[in-house]
Length: 421
Image (cartoon, rainbow, N blue to C red; front, side, top):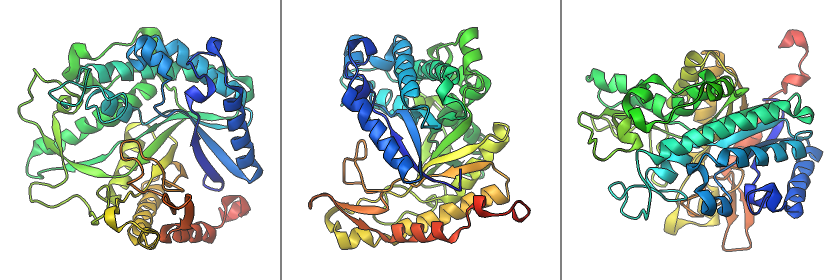
């Protein structure tokens, strides 16, 4: 809720079940670690938002049956999710089953950028194994069924009553590459169906978007009637991670002999449009293009297409790669991050007040500079600078000062009288 301090964190599956399954042993130290963390947050008036799965499949399950490539993951995931709900559900009332499922499937199993680094050689020669255009759909299928099973377990959990559960999606927003080309305009809905509808249509309406079925065909697995029923309305809110936007360029001639997720959506992603203008702006050290208008557009799109659901912004932030110029002085003078937050908070305010989007929460990514999956420590996202060369000393950045000041200016809704609201 917007009137509480909150902290988003993930529980690592192998930290609870080191070998993937309860019967193979529970790490009491791991279980206690999260109790201590959650208790400390609550003691300090901070509401914990907990993610059940942030891409860390236990190695034993990868070795045994290929992790999410196998439907055997469904039973094991439900057991793990149910365990953490029973363990922490009395204290934690906000849950995310899966963080960024399209990234997990696409980057891990279609282009090989993230673990486990699988894809076809025609996509990336570094991939040792995999099958682009097939495995990503299979992984998402098993992931979505796992989500539905976990939510069923959650809704049966007595001590979890009064809580909410969802998925954290991470779409980009798309603008037409060439406004004169009607195909580029039409491609935006298709792009959004592939990056967002793939998981959000399914957990809202119970099945994949029709356009995905039409294009992907036999490569897209099918749900049983029972699975569809469990998937339908299987979230209490839409979690949204937003960073950037791209131009959507209609793809005239796909190569059917080299299937892959992005080609299936019949578009290419472009950072510049037909007139050679970049989308938004991109400061010299920025990791991604800054386009706050896309944030508002995406929020309104979700409101209109998915019957005005509750939306919580689970991540919104600005990464920068300082390279050789990296230092405490340079890193803390992060005016571009401050501007990024100002622009995106304004866009969110316009979405809430003008477009009447039901946004109930917002998290900045991130409190501290940290390990970013494929970028390691070279990409900084924090409000606080971490000196990795000097005992991990922390320094408040300009963005941190601004954000603290921004939060302190507001009157908490709970402190207002009813008529004032």
